[in-house]
Amino acid sequence: MGHDTDQPLQKITSEVSRRQMLTTFGKASAAVLPATLIAGGSASADAPPTTYLFLNADEAAFIEAAVARLIPADDKWGGALEAGVSNYIDKQLAGAWGAGERLYRSGPWQQGTPTQGYQLPFTPAELFRTALDSINKELSQTGTPMAKMTADQQDAYLRSLEAGGKDLGGVPSDVFFAHLWECTLEGFFSDPVYGGNRGMIGWRMIGFPGAYASYYDLVDLHGTTLCCPPKSLGDDVHGHVHENPGIPARLP
Amino acid sequence: MAERLKPVDVVTIGVGLTGSLAALELARMGLKVVGLERGAARFTVPDFQSPAIHDELRFSIRKGMMQDNVKEGVTFRNSSDQTALPIRRWESFLPGTGLGGSFVHWNGQTFRFQIADFIYKTHIEQRYGKKGP
Image 1: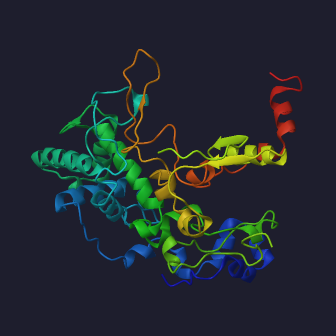
Image 2: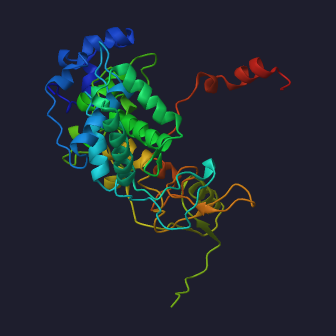
Image 3: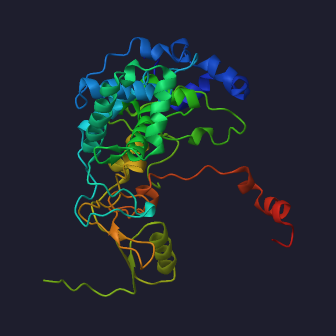
């Protein structure tokens, strides 16, 4: 990213004239954001290729094709694929969450009511692997893997998973779809340090500012639009505390 | 062996939003108050400092400050004719742990005020009439 994200909020806003702050969101953001940030697709053009740690080639091909339909690109913004969501999902499945951290995995095992939540024995990694294996086997028999389908065919297939009623090696298809959809949202909107939301594309699309510490110095600026570039956790990893010198850390 | 401490007037179980406010009021009345917290100690710096504390995935979605239900799980049912089953992943209620109350366990999130919140009396009267529903 070519922009300077280390600027403190105060500095960014002080460089913006009050008149600019009071213009409409679209105009204001265009006035303030560096040109490299405005084109949504530009972040993907030079994005590094994904190195998959968990997903095998067939699994990755399905995930890439699926997330590209769940949050598709348009003429203004890249979609989930361009945002690196498949990379995010891969890293989540390869890590502690995928291995079932904070997932209670002892008995009793039985199907519960919907209000009793997830009651399957699979860790997230097992759930994805099992379901994807079943899906790819099924699609290889039909001769058209997900990645080779047209967009309409892909949508129809995803809808069939979402509708449920299909057993994917012990994983109900609607449960798999729900996990895939949750992970796609997480990968598109969580901090880029997790491997998705490349170029903070999800945040810029919805105007979310990211991990700013405080808006204390802006509290009295009523009727204004915050229009500084979003900030990632990764923009500030050197132990620096975003503090406002005007607010004492403790009572004098 | 249990150590017997000097008795106090009031002990609050937890010193979160509720416990700390109650303790403050009771202490102002002249009572001797001790507040109990459990779990790891956490402090504003470095545990709650920016930007790490703004990690919504870690804290809000993955429940980073909630009790580890693999070690301390609970079962749940809506009514006594159901079989209680383990809550395998926190969803409907969230028991926090460690120093700090629900305000930090919940990632310090408060919902954005709605326009009606600033004109509450007017809003309610317009919607339900002056005498209520």
